[in-house]
Length: 280
Ligand SMILES: [Zn+2]
Image 1 (cartoon, rainbow, N blue to C red):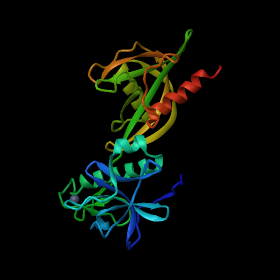
Image 2: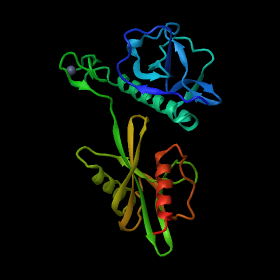
Image 3: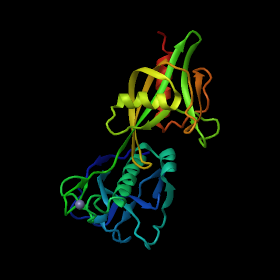
Image 4: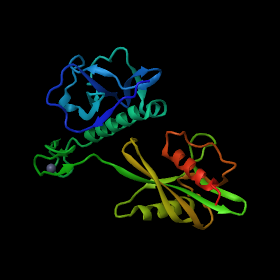
């Protein structure tokens, strides 16, 4: 399969005619085409669908073609030959590039939809002249795309019988599946403070030696997940009764069902397992 090249950018060309690569949304779903069975971003004729590019979000170029995130206008005919797919399905089935671009478009459209007026004086906002932002023409307040930082923690411990991971499940999570601890960063909090607080609140234990693993944007609706592993430092596991249905230690040789590999939580678990299985 051909590997696409995406070059991000936020200032589109002054004029576009004919086809553009697009993340064209209809509600919460995006139109896709299939490339060897896998979902791919389609190209559409902007004029045919009556899409005004000044309401679209320029994302960059995809294989040299301008790429936009946009919503199908109300009353417009559904594009023929394209399939509507939910964002979660695109993340699970699609390649990382298509899912990433569509995730960005989804977040930008949602941000623009919810920032049409100034939160201070109520005037309609306008695109900022230089940045990807909206600006109030009256009081000049600037609104950047909203990003909500989320801290994720995989707590582990080593003992005489081997190593264990502390995993949790929320009510309504897939049957039998467990995952890591996660929560939103609060205003005024450092990432380290958030990590310690979230773990303490959700499962009642203390941690030490946090180790950064990686990050992942998660567009439901605007999270940026930062994943850490951390060593257990003390305390008995007491699951927070409101958020969690269960939390417990699992031997690394008898783990439950885990999240799919597209989630950074799973990549964090796999990386930590590799680290714990290394001879010391
Ligand atoms: Zn204002």
